[in-house]
Image 1 (spheres, one colour):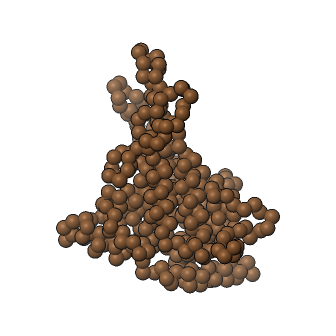
Image 2: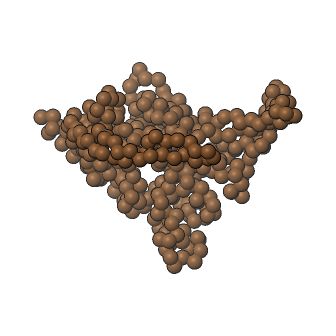
Length: 363
């Protein structure tokens, strides 16, 4: 009976994905810019310019509401692409040991396949980390002088420091990056639908996580290292810090539903006793599908063949990752570096040792 129930659930999620995905089969999301093939001009050897390449390769592939994506400059498009790639890679890092490991579909211009046609907490994370990725990439490109439209954050120099240091250097203008992300990522979302409200909420949560992960960097000036003058500027932490914060938000995500209030739709928790989510929290509408079994329609690979940890009781443990199917253990001999020594000057020399390695894989 359990197997029959799982098959029924698998079937219905397939039906849901087909129905919800019908309107999205011909055009990709802007996430496609983060795929290696998106900005690869060798895809069109005959293209004499990037503008021609964009109009023949990107514009027909990526439908970004009514906005012509090729109206953006090449440096801006490349920066958006890096942001999308950062979001994808951080998603895969955070979910690497989960049943759904944020796998992409190289052959599918929708990038994540049909799995994001379901308004699940996984979709919530993808929207948040992608929105943050674009904001991060734009902010960093501005501070490096790679974009003509922006630069450093000069407004921050008006903030007092109580004489502890002086503002200097190039503080990163995260406000500009967040505005750009909002204008680019949020465009086209339907504020009158539950899905649109969910996407907009999670996009903003991603940008707020980015703003939470700024740090002060300082440099000392003075005779003989006395640090009589300290010059400081504000910069973004590594993007992995944003991923860590959003993963915590994912674990505590709130299931919501749309309700009409004063003439417009808004989101409220499904459970009455649950507190209304804040702007930094992630929200989702649908329960997650079954990631244990392969589902080609959803773009879910399943967990069969995945490496697992036989001694762990966490998400990476064979007990959870293998969905109760059990696992196989394989003993392999591999070559690894060993007996490494530092050789003056500036070189590390290692020997190669043959070692036995025990690995476990889900059935």
